[in-house]
Image (cartoon, rainbow, N blue to C red; front, top):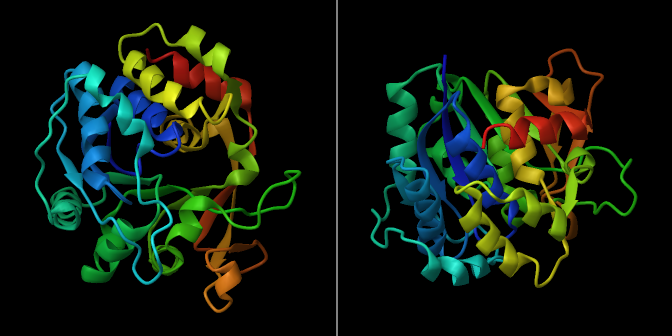
Length: 292
């Protein structure tokens, strides 16, 4: 049976969002109910999602979401990879001001069936859980690419980008009473990488060709892809890619210099979350590229 998924994404900044969406569109077990975009230039991000959906020949609802964090200044005002959009057919007009309501109505129409996959700043999700507090309990699963949970990765920053871009929304999301609340942080995602030339060689499938055009914008500042978001997506369909441990995540708000930092504890009697603490990279790559 297919798994119903909604994707909330800041596609257009790091290339891994587009890589993730391509996987969801190609995955035969995924019923993609919709895409909401978040962070600066949400319309351009929606256009990028539209380009991939058209190549996949799938009519997926796309809604530009909230562009600014709840309380802090925006740190991600632009979607630079949208510069490659002119090569690909895409929609240019989208419903405005409806992303949160789309999420709310779709989840309510499918109680206990929707996996909500969050791979951008948590603003849309934090607002969703605030305006309708019953929504978390109606999800089948919440899967996030968010956080840093151990110090095992050399040079790993104290804070992860999605978490720190809207720490107050991140706090709301981690406080939500979701039945299955899964996070994949930099601890594991930074172990799944591919250099630019290797990725180019892999992009022969039609659905990966626009992704490669977006990636070529990314490659101007980095010579590799880290598969942060695709790793989170693949675990929805193959959980054995990662090892998950139950526990509880807390989000720093009191210290503004560390706002958005995630703290992970396992020795508690009522764990609210599960966190990936190990990954099998070869299993990930097999799962990811087999669908194209």
